[in-house]
Length: 368
Image (cartoon, rainbow, N blue to C red):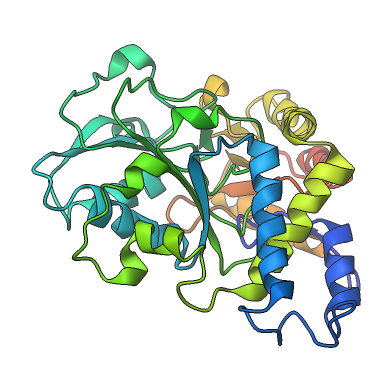
């Protein structure tokens, strides 16, 4: 049994586990940043010290994703939910053109619902009837040339579904909610017009949302929006339109330092993530149906492994015993039940290996 002073294996879908080295550096410097005489929690967001922290965080993200120079990196607030409304406010409202959505799970459905408050929307494909178990193949939806933009969710946290290649959209701007797999693997950034992610899965703590937006999209932002809802205003102010979440940005800087210096970049991170996911899915596949994965095998998320046990009573027992053994937050989302192991970047492979052994042992001790 773990105690409050011991670190557990945190399989939470977010806020999620962070790299230990980043936490240790933050712990060392929390009282007083070297050479500053004050905590990161106390310094001015207008100070040269914080401007350098934000600049370094942006530069790290640009290096990791190989972001072209004609894209802006913004540090905003409000999470993905604010982006669900802010995107159509900037690029749908008043255009007379519909926004198109590829809906592969609960978060994509939420984004569509919010967009409906600002203008017309169309659903190119919706996996709800199948229980959100897969992503569509390109021939299952048709791109409309009059679309204002096309939105998709690269990884559905709740259902455990992930895109491993971008939808082909031609000249139509592609918009992506990448909250759950941001910085987990390389992506062709030039394919996106706008990509956004809440930091609390892979990039940092809750409180900061990272938006990567192409320069030409800023010209489309209407002048009649409040400044805080206008991407162009945030870009012009270099993410300092208001007081940013300074501590959250600082942790993003430390986490991206870790990805660059300790991991070696996103190719290496992707290889580690594939290995971690393969270990867990192997346990599912070899359990003879005892552990039943939710997602179709070709669409299985590398970040969120979702599964069921033979019955709800065993699921409750599994989650309770796992917690006692130091494996935390394995319960599935309240809307779908079951179990979910979120294995974001900072989850060490040792944690996944230990969970696999626990799952094998639990199955032997608790036959269906």
